[in-house]
Amino acid sequence: MHVGTDAGVAGDGEEDGEAAEGSNGASVVAPALEHSYLGTTRRLAGGRDVRATAARLPVLMLPPGAGCVFPHASLPARGSAVRAAAERANGSADPALRHLIAVFAAHAPAYGTITEVRGIVDNTDAVLLAGVRRCRRLTADEGEALSLGASEASEGASEDGHARQAMCPRGYVDVQPLSDEAAPHGPPPECAAHRSWVYRSADERAAASVAANAALEAGIGGDRADAEKLLAMGPIKLSFWLSSQLPLSDEQRVALLQVGSTTRRLRACTAALQYMRVLRCAHCGRACARAAAVFAMDAAGGAQNAFVNAHGAVHDTLTVRDVDATSVMLYGTPSSQDSWFPGWQWTIASCAQCGSHLGWRFTAERRGLRPAQFFGLSRTQLAGIDAVALNELIPPV
Image (cartoon, rainbow, N blue to C red; front, side, top):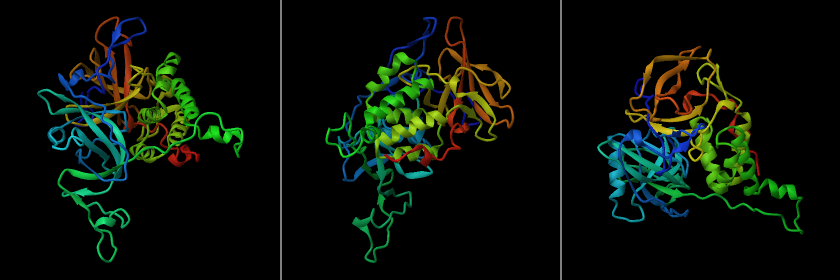
């Protein structure tokens, strides 16, 4: 599936899972849990616990281009440099660093996510990564020039106190694993100095409940029957999962990644969901779909997932049941080659007003497969809620 080298088809997932059931009982693929379009995958044991600490942790860095990935989210990546980094991480002599790779957005290299290699795709240059923990970048590798402030580079600061260029061996960066700040939960004590609503506003469990309901109303997390599944994630994981589901810009995603409070992140996601009423073309602002049309092909994966095409371009793709027929034009004939959704053929979809690429239409190859048709819209091509400043979406606790 192609639009130049950027719009390809691939599938997204973190672990093996069972197929979901369609509305008529027909089995449908669970794209967020499978990567069958990439080929046969050798799964690696996961679940590494990278504890937050003030100490530096030297970690291999993924070549720029993957964008911002959140903890607990999956990221398929491919390319000779990507595969080389994964093989190098898997062969690390230090068991504590084995399988670990740091991912940073190209335009915001200060904050990123430590990921874990979860799978190697046989006979290809593709790998499967899973986010483990947020991190702050402290140094650059030999091939970069990352300026650090004096406070961050105090160990190697020059005698005059000026910042210096801190360097690691090529391919490695020093990072500081980060954790979310602890927040109170449960009923406030009877002798509390503040009214109960003050404590509830900082209660991450209460914020998680509100955010989960907002996600279900928006169609992102399945239907009402899936409410317990969302809450079972726990507040921290739910906050990152919701962050990965929103059609935000890369800058906004990094800003959410930097937030050190679970409660603030959950409240920001809830506010963003309330703004997500209409999805618009990022280039001309033409409305292309209603937010009410958003749905999840698989509740565990959500409505927006990362996919990688044959050229190594990663696409966060939001699934919607339908689009405004007058706002979207289709190009070419349906194709099943490299489809991210095996069983569905893709057709390129573009904005009818400015001609910019928006995503793809997917149509079922056989009768009885549900849904018979849906669209996958590329997050970076949408202006969903970008008009709203992120600081307005993150209210103070």
